[in-house]
Amino acid sequence: NAGVMQNPRHLVRRRGQEARLRCSPMKGHSHVYWYRQLPEEGLKFMVYLQKENIIDESGMPKERFSAEFPKEGPSILRIQQVVRGDSAAYFCASSPPQTGQETQYFGPGTRLLVL
Amino acid sequence: QQQVKQSPQSLIVQKGGISIINCAYENTAFDYFPWYQQFPGKGPALLIAIRPDVSEKKEGRFTISFNKSAKQFSLHIMDSQPGDSATYFCAASTTGGFKTIFGAGTRLFVKA
Image (cartoon, rainbow over all chains, first blue to last red):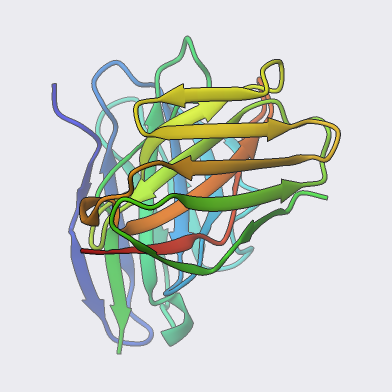
């Protein structure tokens, strides 16, 4: 029973490029959450998705950031025209439908470095 | 009102000692309080969680103490071991809500 999978684990981009982060939730999980963690800081909620629906994106920056969780395939967090301030670890978490968002299982994260 | 304040920022404990990490919240709608453990380069992992209908929950060497009136909760690690050295996050959420609010984290180092 594989856990939450994220790829790539490390991503280097130059300013202005696009970053695409992928998350495959645990088998049977239909809720996906994205968090951002800056160095020496806690986790900041970004967005909560269910299959084909964005439930809450109140933590997402209004520009350049978008997320999706299609019917088939992984959830994608997309950052367009990256800037140095986007450098952080991005974590995906998933939870099963019957418990809602309380019990979240985290992936290993994608560490984005913007040069 | 959505904040969860965590202290201390860092903690050094001798092997065998007790590690205590404290958190405080403001939103009385919170009704689920998990603690996560994170090792360097890894994602956070759920350690233990409590609901406000109990004042204490114990799992092995880990205990959560909850004070509803003070809106505070704490994690106690008994007989701390070097393998416990990690960053610990408290968090809070509401049943049926969408967000889990995390504290800033406590970096624990247990000296051998």
